[in-house]
Image 1 (cartoon, helix red, strand yellow):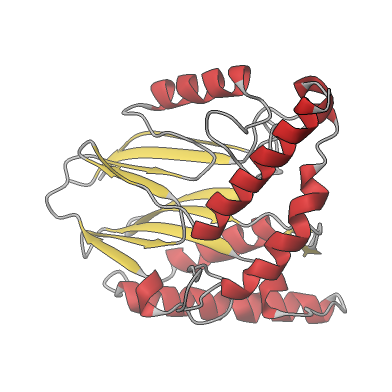
Image 2 (cartoon, helix red, strand yellow; image 1 turned 180 degrees about the vertical axis):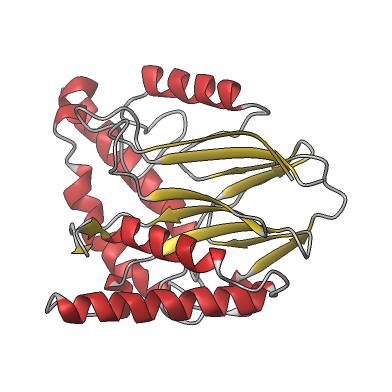
Length: 274
């Protein structure tokens, strides 16, 4: 394999507070996007999303090189659950529900199998062809947030006022928390995530990539994935400049908070598998 370029940064800018993680080893390349805890939960001194992404990255490095996607997802799920419960017990913390556990989206390239595995909503591009996905309920939340912000603007508030004090965080947090019941659910609104519960087969995506000359992995902190990192960053910066509230061009569940450089953590890696 040849890594052409890679980059990861937290939404607050350079530093340690980044729930994303890029893992590169002899057998696997992965982008792991830890889920931000809106309640601010931590384990082992780390935000839950960061704990999840680091735990999964460490576990991935030790998997058998020829493990299947199903086997890998099950093993990573088991390790995250075990580690989260161990640390929580040592810190005398309890999880009220399984969806309070640390969780992460997973995107992996297996060198031995020449396959791409995806659980959740990170993006990948194979030889110029994009593979993007979103959760149905997230599109609903984004539209609800957009409507609410538009209503506030219609009442006379400015975009700058709303960015400095975004009322939609309190509006959406209870809804998002309730809808986490759909994590690893096979019915309507179900979605996959590594969170300590079994990921159903329907949410473990496997793409043959033996033919691939070039692959790009990106977390959902990039609204569009371009052929190079520079182009991808340039597009993101144009969106952030024109729509820092993130409700018009690429509606999101949150905008750019005061003092932050983007609306979400972001990761990008471009590589040649052979």
